Image (cartoon, rainbow, N blue to C red; front, top):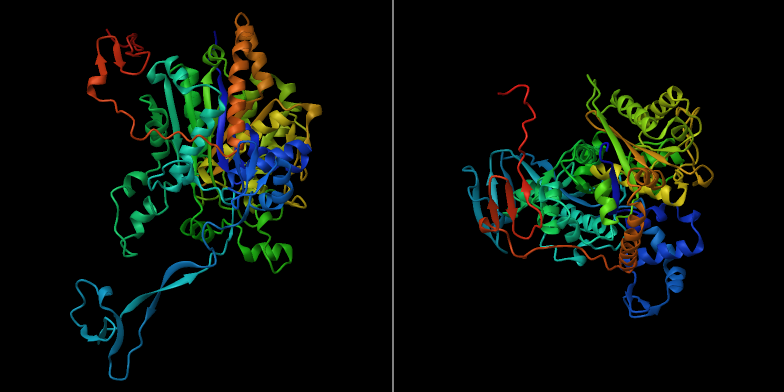
Length: 633
């Protein structure tokens, strides 16, 4: 038998469009192209997620106690739900009133002295020796000094970019489990991974009992660590803000923590763990690591994904100072308006001015094809390859380079080797990086054009998920992947609906950049190319096969047991459907195994053959063969 095929048996997460499992977020993206029934299902599910209503028995109940039917929820709250999802004005904080400090200098008086008053409790522990200090009323002191100094005065400042792809309005992560002051990014990791696991329809312990403990791997990270107050943000700022540094901020701030939290608090895994980062291509970096291990046989199950809570004043200001974000002033200039259109702030391949910062958590569950057949797992697709290439010598670390030409063309060639040239030419599409910057629209469209010419591809559909959900940094390609899985399911390539025209400097000879949703039911899509370009020269492209293609491949390889597999799959699919119903009612079932019995040294037994661990059905076997027999005695 050939190399193991890494198949997608579950996916989940949350972004500005909603929950990923059961295609909720995808349906929000193609909302206008759905049937009336599917539109209502999407609105009601989002309403429960956003706390607009909650499901109680056979009715939906508003916070004021009114009982509504699904139809009534749709009729009353559709406008609110649609407005509270996708890219919009930031409400996590007030982007027009960010607390900060301004440096000011006191002017010298005629007699050469400076005088000011402050509260005594705000006095420094060791004031400068030249200060003359006098008590005044109200617990204040008067300071007189002859030494000119600069001082910081607290005041508000305004972000130049106020749009973001934040999670649906009203969706409170901490309400769904005992969050224990976890940084937002780690809350997102727990919710996203839980959603992906539930979506498989398989009990996790059943999966664990089917493989050796070290055949399970978790591949996850965040590109910018946890920069909120409970993580590195508080670690760096608290002392300057008069607060204390906690004993958790260093540990919880690490960019490895999404993987660590999943291992410790969801899976209870002792298997492989890996946290790789590659700027905005990070999701594809961890995906490549998982593929490497599954194809080699080292891993049979992989949890792959990222969680990034990147919407913060500091990160926004940093990217804005690089000229990378869509700022209010330039958006107005492009539109000839005095008011920025936040909903349309992300405009891939159109006249644009920068990307929109977003947050997201996206996870997929991968298995080798033999295990998926054995367990009766439902198949949503397969990832055959991820290619990663650097740019070489660069003039600017943030500028695009040649690496993406390598990764993208290799991915197309690899797909042709698997499914054939005709399938790639007529039944493939591109989920572009589509960051919404002027440089990206030119370079990525040129890339697509040149590769299409080489492989004689015409009318190549190109979609860009960032138009809907913004740029979530490490999780961005996860947003693209779950959108691609939706296209396989619904035969719709999401249009780039935030734009009115394609920019004149975008190469369009071989590609189609649909502005409206594109019905591809007549040419069912069998291959998706997920493309990512990251600062620093982090370029990656993945080849993803549709479930229709994968099932044909599985039937050929596992022909003797395929009918039995289909029978087992029916039960698994039913379980996944039941979870989807609960999740649509806002019952997310977040897994958080804090406080469960711990493993210690007495739970491990080691002999010459391997390691047996209490609670795990299969042992960890030692490698007994020497792979370098030609080099050793």
